[in-house]
Length: 467
Ligand SMILES: Cc1cc2nc3c(=O)[nH]c(=O)nc-3n(C[C@H](O)[C@H](O)[C@H](O)COP(=O)(O)OP(=O)(O)OC[C@H]3O[C@@H](n4cnc5c(N)ncnc54)[C@H](O)[C@@H]3O)c2cc1C
Image (cartoon, rainbow, N blue to C red; front, side, top):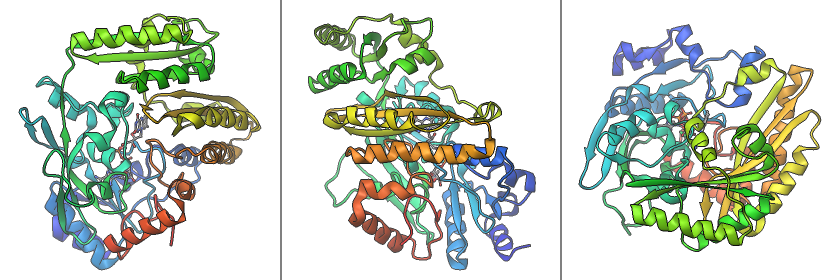
């Protein structure tokens, strides 16, 4: 028995330290397609040294203190739905599974605040506040399989972000344990000018700066009214321009999504005509505001030459939007697929779209290269690309994946776009981080990391390029 395992058992109790091989095998990685492909091809079998399942902040403190003293690597794990390889077990590391820290700490209906332990399932958190007529307003597609701490650690976005913001706009306070075992509580009022906002050390930190143990969200009251709009777009550029006008005129439907024709044929068959693209919207808010927004947007769409499409397209999207696909069924058909989300200013976004799709279509075996937008800002918009490649030789699928991903990220970076709108960096995009931060920014991040985690115990290999 390893010395660290004995010490962990003494520190937090034996039941919270798991060494059973079957359990260890279940938590070797997150949802990154490459890890699933390597599993499928039986190319990877390494699991963590042990899994620890803390029940309270004091347990996390004890675990990190021990790990820091013994220089043992630690890998935080929320619910494992990350898609960038942020979790990949190594035989020398402790996998710190937050799923047993899943209590509701407080729901404050006057100040509209809710605090959860970080391992709380996102959908359960939303249901708890929904029972009081409130909403967190954060709806990632993975809401049922991700944790509230994971949302913060990956800087996540929900489907209603255009009005309700991304996780950095919804977070109010964070409790975290630093690698040396100290606890920090950051965020005490709706806004502060008390120096740099230290919550951002943890927003998007992907397990590299410490362990998030509690999160407090600023809630909303549930909307009085909901309405839908849908329009056909004859080109991607036409719909993008209409969206720019809508947002810059001050209208913010929480959901505004535009699909290219390939995605319309794949996702909306028999709901809408199949020769165009599609722009769908959900409007929410006070009844008078919803009616005014819907009418004004219909007018903008008309002037932009967009035909109305059936609202059934929106309800179809709403009913199927949280589907979690299985990679294995694609591998069975000799296909590897992936989605990559990027963003860019309005003046660059069509270059990103055109160049990414053209470049993907050059890859041998490519069977799909398509995109949609789903998060809209005054200064630009995101694009969410989907690619799929078919190859006779399954062993060649991983190389095809990396070729396609490289094309998406390089074409985006070449057009002033970010290489990650909301999935994070993980292992998949670490080598591309310099495109977003520049060499100076990467060096600054490395300096911050060294100061917080001098023994480099937290999630090595993820997010931050090596010094
Ligand atoms: C089908 C599907 C759809 C998705 N849709 C969306 C979407 O709409 N929007 C979106 O933003 N993302 C989406 N994702 C990605 C993923 O769900 C998010 O990144 C989510 O926030 C990860 O949460 P998790 O609890 O599963 O984290 P994990 O996968 O367990 O971990 C992710 C990273 O965060 C770190 N981490 C986790 N918890 C903690 C903690 N408490 N303290 C410190 N570090 C921690 C881990 O070390 C790892 O680096 C989707 C994923 C899937 C599979």
